[in-house]
Length: 414
Image 1 (tube, rainbow, N blue to C red):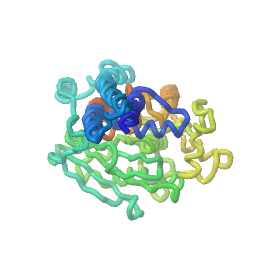
Image 2 (image 1 turned 120 degrees about the horizontal axis):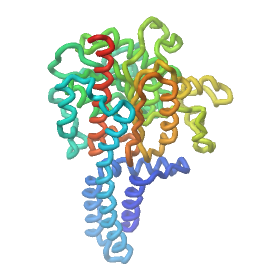
Image 3 (image 1 turned 60 degrees about the horizontal axis):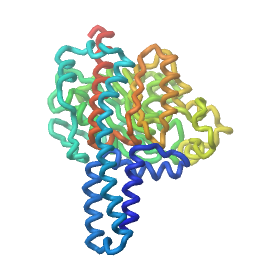
Image 4 (image 1 turned 60 degrees about the vertical axis):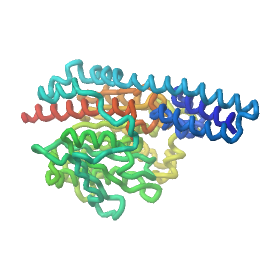
C-alpha cells in the first residue's frame, strides 16, 4: 500500500510539471491528480506526510516494498518544493506579457494614486487559507433573476460596502463544459479582490446542456449583460464600463460575447440592447471547434465527441455552420475590444497551442491590443483557489482591467 502511495505521489509531482495530454483519457486523469498539486504543493506535503505516517503505524515498514514506498513519498516532497518554487515564475511573466501587449508605459493612463497603489503594494491573496474568501468589506446579493429560467437565469452581485461614484463592472461566467457548474464556483479570488478595490462583480448562471443547445448559453450571457445595462446602476455600477471574463467554457462564452456584440440572432426579444463590452479576459477557454489551426488533428483529440453529447444537435458534418458560429476564432473582427487571454502552459484540456493560434489570429485582425499570457506550469482551473500563482494572476488581471477602464474613460472624455 505504501509503495503504491509513493508512486502516486510522484505521479502527482510529474503531472504538475509536465503536460501529459495524450491520449485524452490520461489527460483527464492527470488533470484530476495534478490540480491541487500544481496549486497547493505545500499542503500536499502535509497530507502526504499524514497518510504515510498512518501507513507506517499500520506496519507498512515491515516489508521491503514499504521502505521503498516511504522513500518515494519523502523524495516526492523535493519535487513539490520545486513546484512551489516554479509558481514564482508567474508574476514576472505576467508583467512581461502585459508590457509586450500594451506597452511598457501602459499604467501611465491610470490616475496617479491608482498607479502607485498597483506598483508598490504587496502581492494580494491568502495563500495560507486557499479555500477562505472573507466577506469583510463586501456586500454580496445572491439569486437575482435576470431571465425567465427559474434556476439558471440567476446572478450574484459582489460590491464594496462603501462606494464612491459609478464603479466598473466585471461579468463572470463559470465553466463546466457547458453542462455543469455554478456561479459561486470560479473566480472567487478575483471577484473578492476586485470588489474590495472598487469594482462591482456579477457572476451568472446560464442554461446548461444537453437539454439546452447552443446558442442558448450565449443568449443567456447576452441577457445577463442586458440586465447589467438596465439595473447595475442600482448596485453602484457603471453600465457603460463592463469587462467580461470566465474560465474554460465560461472563457469561451466570454470571448464569444465580446466578439459578437449586438447580433440580433443572439438577442431574441432584446435586439436593441447594446451588448458590446469594454474588454474581455478569457481564462483557458476553447476557441476553435473546427480545427482551423490544425491543432487537434487526431480524431480522439477532437472536440466533436464532447459537443455532440453536450450543446450541439449533431456532428460537424451535419451542422458545420453551428460549429463555426460557436468558435471564437471564426468571429475575430477589427472592432473587437481589448483582450487579455490567459492560458495554462500545461493545461491538458484546452491546449496552449489553441489559444496561441487564437491570440495570433485576433491580433492580426483587431484594431485593439491583444495580450496573451501563458501562465508557467499552470493546469486547468488555476484561478479557483488562493495560491501563490493565483495571487499573481489576480494582480495581473487587476492591472489589465484598470488599464482598460482608464483607457475607456479617457476616450470618453471622463
